[in-house]
Image (cartoon, rainbow over all chains, first blue to last red; front, side):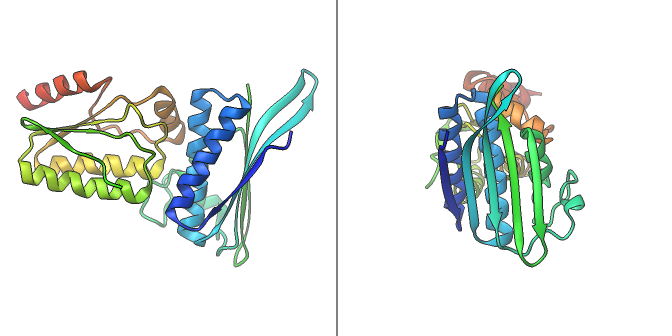
Length: 137
Length: 118
């Protein structure tokens, strides 16, 4: 399967476009209403972080599959990349309530709980790549 | 984009029917407070039946507008939060504990009535 869409995020409208693209793809892949809400919310948080901290970046959405004993497992992968300042302390941003923007500090730890897989790769001064996956149940 | 705010006697009614972007959410916050001030409204119902996603930013804007309205002396009730939205908010660790809610617009108006009589 090779359903993929890339959304550029360089304005608040990019946040809206990214989550709309995510909702469409989630629907197409067969996710139910609650998981669609989880996926859209995760995308919104990731896209907002790009806009807030890196000014611009990209959200890549992709339908993926993996072979398991029980058969083929399908899922949706979201990659959020930017060439912003990077995250100084990944440990701190993963703590509930930690914020530098005056927000709720629920963003990244929230995304981790909403999704099944979460991976963060950040180099100070070079940028950040966050990869998350939700598997179809 | 502006979210319409309807006046019904001492109340204001809002039904959010669009995918909220940040700017629209902040504009709504300001519009609602101005309208409360202008009309001397006692209560507000914000209906979220058509809202399919509330992320941490929108949650903060909504929680804040409830507190700001309380400061001004108006009670706010949020209604119609969808199952997926409720599940997502709790997954995210966002509780909105102080915020009065009701299942739908009708029950929201009843709740306002009770809160104002209490």
